[in-house]
Length: 510
Image (tube, rainbow, N blue to C red; front, top):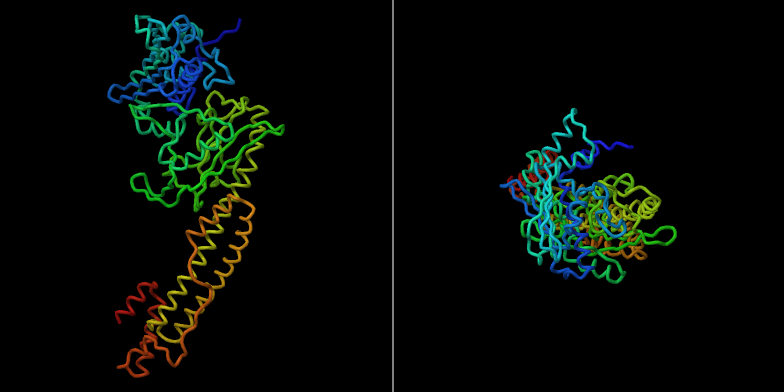
């Protein structure tokens, strides 16, 4: 007979996750499954069902509560004592391995499950002594079998309860000092805004386009009402993109539109769909934007993190993924998140999924942000020339040039800038042609053109005839010709050794 020792319990609890915030995701997905069952059984309307998370740093406790189906008393002890023996449906349920509920044992001294099902007047409770569990696991002299270990650290109880109330509750008590991040409401909220299956927030103005798309295509996004300390959670996407720090950030770009894409297997079966935000793609999105990067989701719960769909597997450059915001929703039933939910189980459908999405990410999106950079740079060069041309004309009119040599040098620089602007214009014409057959490129081109296009033309206006021209030194009427020549040399030296703005200031003072 095979022996299953205590170490299997360690592997499923203490050693299971690198990021302890994942326990919130585990309990949320279990509650979400029960909400789905409550709706399917007509126990309640979806609008009345919720998941409530209470975080109390003062009491060092966390409570996760849902008002879905509850767990009947005749199933309570058996289900919660069984490890990795879930009867959930892999094709339908978000949590189906029967191990996620153990996650809280790694970060507290006491873990309590309690529940009451509809029509029952009993509240069932299971209490885990997590401290004792860890002590036994760490004691080499104690080697109980896994089942015996569970019996050693758990106890059950029942008490009368209101038969009209159904619920399931997890209490994580005496959170360990090394797990203080679980008691940081702001950090937990930020984590869940990325991971949890919640609606898009109002600040993401064009979110309606996502809902319109899934309605038109017969798709679905699972969304639940989840509260943290009484405040409802929403996905952290915003229409604005920021730079700077969290304490001092400014808007540098905006998401003005969305692009959608479906991915199919070789046999034509839908594997996934995605959306990306359309912006000016001016640069890699700064980290102050917490929802940057393309995220992978199954049942609207994030799989992995912002690095999961990234270089070198899916993007040609390390910076590629962070030019975008967006989500890939895996829909095929055989795309199954692994036990740690940091990727999918590797199977033939997973490989087909990778083969389907890679060309779009590796080539199309690479081309998109490079296209945007080329268009922007070309428009900037044209704009810079227009500004230089205007500055040149203003200096002519206000007699700001020192002498003929100074004017000639400025004209030479202007002519070089003109040639650069002409080359930029030719590149813009080519990119405009590229955009004619690609709606996404067209939107990006038109947005950038509106933002950066300068008024004017590329012609260099020449100065007035020399005999009508006046330079700075010609305005020094009290000086003779030789003295003006000397001042001109001084001005020239000043311009050669000082920064432009400083040189102009010094010459003006003189």
